[in-house]
Length: 141
Length: 141
Image 1 (tube, each protein chain N blue to C red):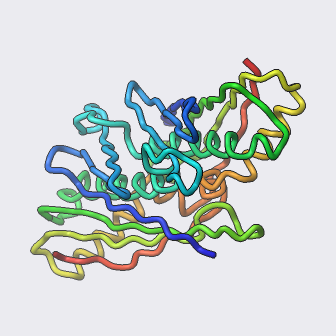
Image 2 (cartoon, each protein chain N blue to C red; image 1 turned 180 degrees about the horizontal axis):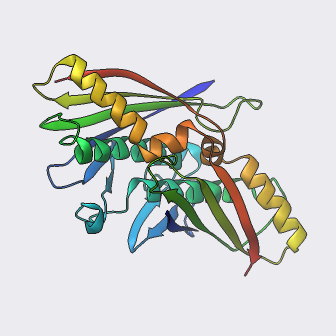
């Protein structure tokens, strides 16, 4: 069964600041001053990295017991490259991440569990494979 | 030239809550209670929708003058589908969006500018095309 998630992003009057709303939760994204913004929040590509690391964290915690893996703490360090060359793709060329577990499990088990997380992470799948983007309209209000 | 963006996502002690950090900016993502979370923030796939709409908004505002298009307000409504079927892909199957301009420009010019936004949006390109995800390590702290 398909579940549909929804969001609205609204350009704020100030600089490049954008306020998004999802189920009453707000997210302010912006650009640093050197990019023409007012630096009131992280930027959209940084938010993508956060979404990936958070999704991996949620999968890790949700499936640890069923996968017979235990850990006390988990964090992910992520980084991704974007080129400013005019003929390069506009988005991330590569995203790298290192998973950190505070655990007494073996390295082998930790790596097997990391494989499981990667295979079952919705944001990871969204990024690693193509998503069909469909513009449903351009409305002049 | 490549620019590298960085983030850290850390699982919080409470439920499925995850705190991400980018340049001192925090982002709390979580899941609703029916998904096992404590509903302290939007979830990671919803954050992806916000990142896309925000990136489109920033591109719109940044390039309007150079593209000879003027508008007073801009917002984007976004939605995306994820299947819970065991054999379906884990991530978004499709993301749809409608752009809203408060503008006196013609519909034709608004649609041409929407095309420009789509072609030049880093998050849009990241989602519409594959990104190489590279696990650089599994560290047991």
